[in-house]
Image (tube, rainbow, N blue to C red; front, side, top):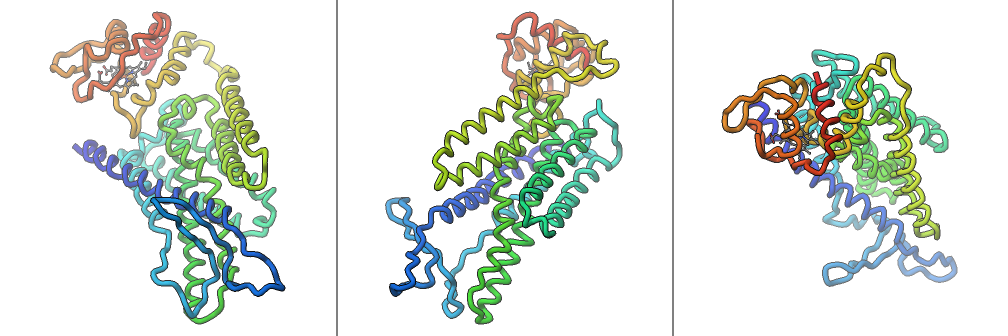
Length: 411
Ligand code: HEC
């Protein structure tokens, strides 16, 4: 009952999270686009400028009319009413995301975060590590970008990336691949909302207070918030990728999942940068496709190069290893691995176990049952599960054998 309620709540939280996230990111992308497309007023000192408060203007065709937009300095004597603020999309995304994290990962002591084959952690340690990373990640990032290093982006940006990858490496010692990617996504996403809360909105509040006190428009408030706003803008694509990573088990559960994460973050930041540079860099499209192709090639290399055999690995049957790869590449893991997207039963220790089917009959799992379950899953539906598994009849006999060998090896 408890897990059923958690399941339903996670549906609601996920829907709110996705809608709020789209609204937030949509705003961020649209505002950056408008900023980059503003037509500057003529900078002619001699001619009388009829509108000295104007910073730029822009016309946009939408919904059967033209939106004529002007960006201008605010006159403290004529503060516009109503004035729209943009923050609740961000806060709602974070709040629903935190609730989702709890309903998907933190229930049952955070066992869905863990990977039994890595270092064991019991009690509330998994949740503690996860929450600690989210809070600690923000404190470290915020402190780093308050120091003088923020003037030296050539150092501060690679240092920030190195910190993210160290965190991923650390979590990879304990968490399963999917939880590692989501943890890093949650850490980066939390930094984004904390940027909105403690830099962007705080500066806007100070700015509005100074205007209401009758002081002239002071652009320095905007400058302070701009750096954090740009961070948010550039890490949007990587965070979106990380949040969707439950659908890419072949990447999250790969042996080199942490270097792959690094390639993904760097290339997606680069993609956003090239999209923004299209107004002044003519070759941007070539560079953008070049980046994507280079990233795919790098990921393909990281996926395919054999790892150093670990002691004892020589004893692992090659059929089991091939089966494990198929389990990822065929998308079995997406439905069967523990976590939010889990549609199917846990397959740990399935061989020789007794299963109860939808018609209440009992069956002892042997090789023949496993084969049938893969090739024609509708023949026997496990009690309590929807008949959602697609038939994998297209797999060759050898591949089925390898998958069965892998399933048998799951203890
Ligand atoms: C779209 C989600 C989905 C995918 C993909 C999927 N499964 Fe399943 N699987 C299920 C569901 C749901 C069930 C339980 C219902 C049933 O018995 O068909 C199930 C049942 C099973 C069972 C029987 C489990 C038991 O407890 O008796 C096995 C074995 C299995 N799947 C293996 C695989 C393998 C191997 C793959 C990849 C080749 C795979 N599944 C891909 C959803 C999926």
